[in-house]
Image: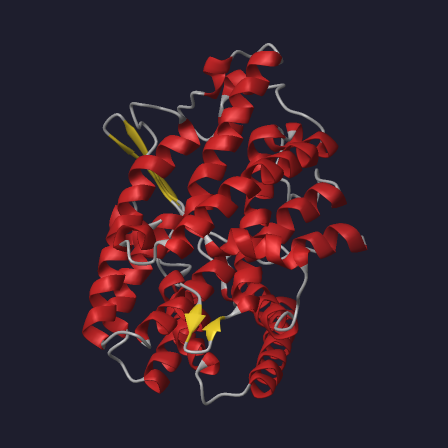
Amino acid sequence: MGETKLGRVESIDILKGIVMILMALDHTRDYFLAHSFQFDPTDPINTTIPIYLTRWITHFCAPAFAFLAGISAFFIGRKKSKKELSVFLIKRGLWLVFIEITIVNFAWFFDIEFRNPSLMVIWSLGISMIFLSVLIYIPHKTLLVLSIGMIAGHNLLDSVHFEGSILWAVIHEFQFFEVGPFNLMIGYPLIPWIGVMSLGYNFGTFYDVGYGQHQRVQTFKRLGALSLILFLIIRGVNIYGDLIPWTSYGNISQSAMSFFNPTKYPPSLSYLLMTLGGTLLFLAYSENWKGKFMDAIKTFGRVPFFYYIIHLFFIHGAALVAAQLTGFGWKSMILYEWVTEVPELSGYGFSLFTTYIVWVTIIVILYPICLKFDRIKQKNKHIWWLSYL
C-alpha cells in the first residue's frame, strides 16, 4: 500500500517510516520512563517540557497513519474494480481486528489469560477499512463532505452518554468495562477515525496521474496551513472542538502545554486539525527528499504492519529484562492492567535520557530485520498473503 501508476510515492513512505519510529518512542516511554508511572506526561502541573514534548510529538502518529491508510486504499483501487477493492478492504479490516485482539493484545500485556482485551489503533484501522469498503461507492465529493462532517461535527456528541453501553463507547467514548473476568478497554472509538480514513481516500485523488506534483504540493501547503490556522482559532475560542477546554495557568509554558494538548480519545476536531494539518505540510515539503537517511526511514514505512507487531514485542521484552535487572522481577511485566497502572511497578523506571537510549537501540536493532523483510516482500509480490504483513 503506497503505490500509484507512477510508482511508489516516496513522501508517503517517508512519513509512514517517521510515524513508526515516533510510535516506538511513545511505547518505549510507556514501559521505561519512571515519570510515566507517576503522572500524565502532558499534565502541565507535574510534567517538564522535555517529557511533554516526548509525548506531544507522538500525537501525530495515529491520525497520520489512518489518513495514509485511506490514501493507500485509493492507490489499490486504481488497480482493482470497486467490488474487488471493497472485498480487499473487508478482508484486510477483519484481519487487523483479529490481530488486535490476539497478537497485539498479547504483546502489550504478555498475559496468556487475555484479561485485558483492548481495542486500540489496529482495531480502529480495521473497522475503518470495513466501513470504507462501503463508503467507496459514494461519489468522491459527497464522501468528502461526509468525511469532513464526521471530523468537524462529532464533538457535538461529547455530552451524550449511555451508562454501561459498550456499543456507545465503541462509537464515540473512551471507556473501561468489567465484563466477567475481563477488563475491556475501548481506547479508539470509531468516530471520527472512520472519517479520517475516508478523508485520506479522497486525498488519494491528488496523486492521480492527471494531477501535477507542483499543484499537489501547493494544495497541500494551503490546506495544511488552513488546518493549523483553524486549530488556533477554534482552540483559542475554547467553546467547541474539544472535550476538555484548555486552561490558562498564569504562565506561558503551562498554558501552552494545555493549549497544544487537545483530546485524543476520541480525537477531537482540534486534535485532528493540528495533526492532519501537520501531516499535509509534511507531505508537501517532503516530496523531493532524497538520500541514504531517507532510504533508511522508508524501509520502516514500507513494512509498517510487520514493524508495528515486532516493535511491541521488542519493547515489552526489553522492559521484562529491565524489571528483572532492577529488582522488580520479570513477572511484574506480565501485566493484568496497563503497564503504568500496575501497583507492583511503583518506583520502577528510568530517566528520560535512558529511555531515549533504549528507543534508539530498539530502532537500530529493528532496522536490518525490517530491511530483510522488505526485500522478501519486493521479491515475492506474487505471494498474496505477504500483503497482509
